[in-house]
Length: 425
Image 1 (cartoon, one colour):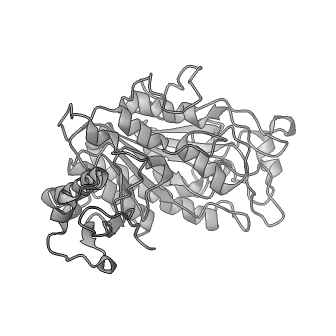
Image 2 (spheres, helix red, strand yellow):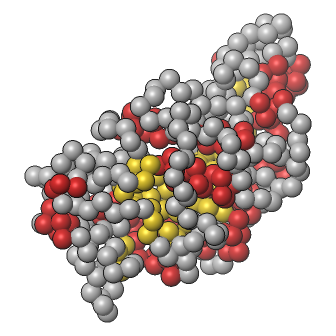
Image 3 (cartoon, one colour):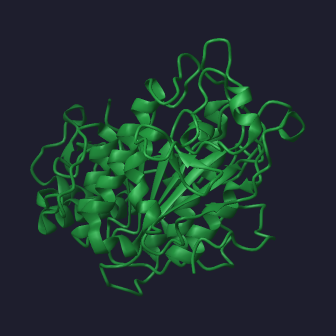
């Protein structure tokens, strides 16, 4: 995919200020002024701290297959061909029982150990109050944190970073991917990169600027926003080189699959272990839009789950005791229909399951109120109803784990009226 390009403009010297980032891009999403994090005085210099890793399962993951409610009588009835069978004691190829009502899909078995040691929690029937079934709109609403509102200019993760005490790190917020996600757009100074080893800055040959002195060019520009962002970009490059984060091998015998998502998690673990000052990281994984041939214990969805679980497990194993400082939060724009369709798949739905993984999480529990799968309990007569607004989950993680002040308007137009889910002790 094509690397992102910084905004163009001309300054007093007449040279177009435009750059490409090898292996990724510094996403300069301007709101008409210098990012706030550049205008405030740093109050903390410690490189080690708490980290939130947000993982977006793009395409609407089927939470009813990921964490099947086998104890609900409506589940198997609605899915005669694709329901995940109930756990069978002693049979390693069946669903992994969690609490006598819910289970993990058999392909998610690697996560069982994290459930057992209470590092993994599930929030079921979670999602957005927006009723859209559009992937694009629902992802936009979830990343901006404003369901039903398309005019929001920044993302909820960016707002969370801005609310934290400033730390002297150009790598406070990082997305592993080709472009900056909406969740990190704003004034937080986030960067996106596809490969931390190849992340670098070079002039765009089409701009005609000489390669020599490129960093000095940004230092001398009269455009304050470009000057400051250029400085932060070079600082990010220098930090990666100084810490040699890309050379840190996986620890504790962790073995990551070769998939792009798994390698993104591997690089996030490298940034955490290198103590570069990371506070928020973002990664994404697609392939969840299973309209046709979804499968049950085996099939295309099972294959996606297997790679997903192996990646998460490797990440947790790699971090070791550092997992106590980290929370990994999964999200998806909406779930799938309760009933299977005529193609043995599922269509766009409403509620789904989200995972919360980390050392400080009160794991080994299913959170949220289960609405049931009976016809009268379904949303619009077809979907798993949402009983936990995603903003309640995201807000609790941001406040209780990252330390975002409760007074922060993290989700404009909405306030947490109810008590916390209780994910943290």
